Amino acid sequence: MQRVGSVLLEQLLNADHGGHRGQRMACADGHQAEFIDYRPKQLQTILGMVRIERAYYHCAACPAERRGIIPKDQELDVAGTSFSPGLRRLMARVGAQEAFATASRDLAELAGVVVPSKTIERTAAAAGAAAEQANQAERAAILAGRVQPIAPASRLYLAMDGTGVPAVPKDTAGRPGKGPDGRARTREAKLGCVFTQTRFDDAGWPVRDPDSTTYVGAIEPVEAFGPRLHAEAVRRGLQHATTVIVLGDGAPWIWNRADMDFPGAVQIVDLYHAREHLALVARLAFGSAREAATAWIAARRDDLDAGDIEGIVTEIRHLARRHPKVRQELRKEAEYFDTNKLRMCYKHFRARGFFVGSGVIEAGCKTVIGQRLKQSGMRWTVNAANAVIALRCRLLSNRWEDLWRAVA
Image (cartoon, rainbow, N blue to C red; front, top):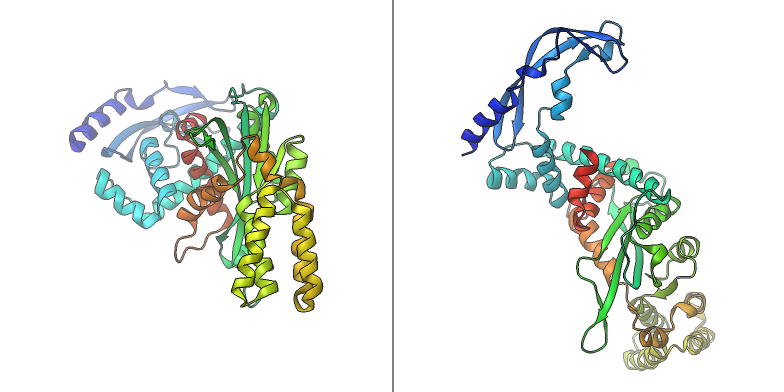
């Protein structure tokens, strides 16, 4: 069937007499280019190899690198490549989903398309770069008010987090890290998501709207990431939402961006992240005394659920006075709770039916970033990682078709 299809496709592609435009045609600069001859090209498609004839024109007035003109290549979107647009799209998708070598084997097994893993890698990188260009163009249009926002639900949630991506040495050189030698082995990818909530389950817990989560992300400074997430929130109806909630852990950069980009939004520190800090305090103060640590954590978790953050701060500072060897660490934990106390009013937040956990973005870090970019033995350049992240954000946001319409 594929062989029959490739024969029919080849006949169709050659039905226009090679894209002949007469003896002369205007080039991009308005000069007159002369027809020289027909030149063949082997094109690999989803159906197999096809041979196409293309009219070749020469413009003597243009710079040397632009004198050759093949209008048919432009029309078929195969200029500078021997792969059809459909096959490039297929390679980009599998390259975004799995390791390039695995993607090569799967294409051969499932589609009968044989392409080397390096070709899939290059194609995915090019598609990801095109996706990022489309993202930037869309962001500019959104912030300029040229894009009609999606009608929001009454509650619009925003969440952001960071996760390390294993990077090649040239992209970590000079950066401090957590390794024994103090050198970095990873680069932080920042990920943001937007989702809505309109209903509750039978027990009264909030339920995320199905298929409402969209992602944006990249390895980039927070100053660049902030506008990226803000534009996505605007596209999703930020300016018309009744209530906006920002979820995150205790990282200061998250709340700095929330204050800057989403003023007036409800800010909530992930409850489970706060509980992890309580467990850390117990380990520091009680060491191997498990019963004492367990009892202390249980009491403080009750305080946390009740929103008594000042009581927790008082208890931690009391422990700091009793344990001078870990005093600085305990004071740091007390400061963490004191700084975020208005973001930890969990009893109040639950009464209003808000999510109090950032599980959506933490799961996103695993699915969008981890499953593809943090497999065993992987090391990425920043550019290659960002290309794959751009593709995966589109794919997992159910915006894959939007991407190909934008870059077509």
